[in-house]
Picture 1 (cartoon, rainbow, N blue to C red):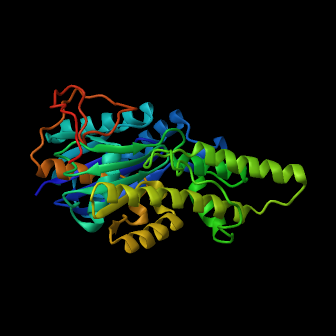
Picture 2 (cartoon, rainbow, N blue to C red):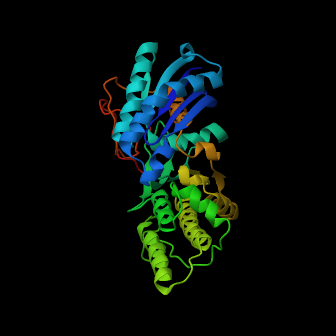
Length: 357
């Protein structure tokens, strides 16, 4: 069985993983988050420099944790999009160098396919049909997934504006909580009342798209609540606002995810991405899936955020599926939509329109 080295550098985390036959052998992660905190968000140039410094040490650490050497690596997989262009170039350049030096094939991987594949490292192969809810910093999507690496991914819905993760960051800033906003709001919400403020559930009206997502208005509703409290001289309960906002997000995400499963006759829901680490999202999804008779799969928290293991997992699936390696001339694709797990702009794949069976 081939050992696949996975490299992830799409944003602020340098991730390296080693996977063989669906089993995570070892991994390493280095975050430059502390360098971005004072800016309230990720600075691409800082992230890229951090990747340059951290990548080789992460490769060494992952190999050591797996008790392997570079000679054991039989293929390299790398995120080539979407993400920050400068950051992606670091990972792709490194992947080309490792593949060339080792004389092994290389596979260009879509970052979001990696999030879906992360669950396979914890729960085994995905079923023949599943609904995948991806909720990360810049993405909120409902996907119909068959074979992740052989079939096109069907988008059931994508957010119209702010993704859930972006809304968490912006609301945290409104409440004076630190960046990144997701973990900060989750911590604050533990002391709050989720029914204290009746925030809206976006796009849940009778005439709204049933699977649509939009979190900009919810963020604005929080801003108006904060402004009204200040104008009236009332003390703002940060825990209550955090808990009420978090409840609105979790309620909306899980409501639409369950609806997607029912509409498409799917019995498995997979929730992945950074926001899948949120305690209320996980708890409410578990409750609603149990009530609906739907199997819920959520990766362990450490595999929800960006990591190299998930990219190695996609590479492992591609190798086992007999996929053609990516062309060495490949470049980054910072804004590519997820249709195929493997990305290669120099190839000429069959671009048949995906359809919902």
